[in-house]
Image (cartoon, rainbow, N blue to C red; front, side):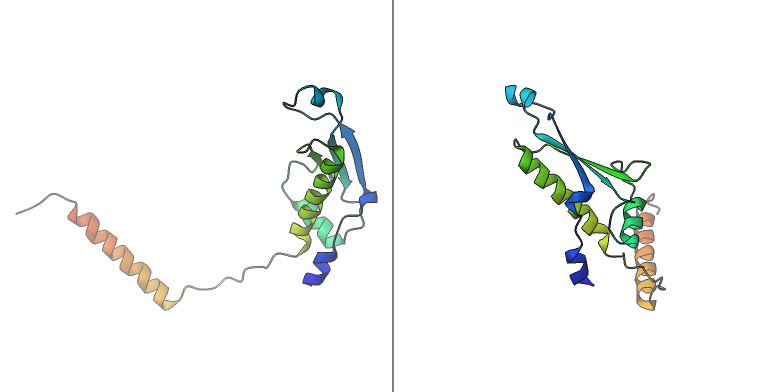
Length: 137
């Protein structure tokens, strides 16, 4: 299963990439060069497995629109190529994070020893609080 998730990557042809001007400080370069990149990835229309699509759509992420389109903005670097590679790497990292199904927790009962330790701790705390009271003769 681990080998399969290593191979799970987003096909670049399914990602719509558009260049735009970056925000923030940067002098004249930021005002004249379109170095930031906007990536739009339609999760529903992608070639990802159905269970991965479902887990991606179930994420509570503000970058996923109501229509199921993931929108990423990459503007960390000064060159468009580096921002494009960074955006695709972040997209693949997000897909990898949901590629493997989460392990479901089986509910268990507390052990006898853990219950005893809990009660001993409560008794000790009770004694500590009782000793904080008024001193009586």
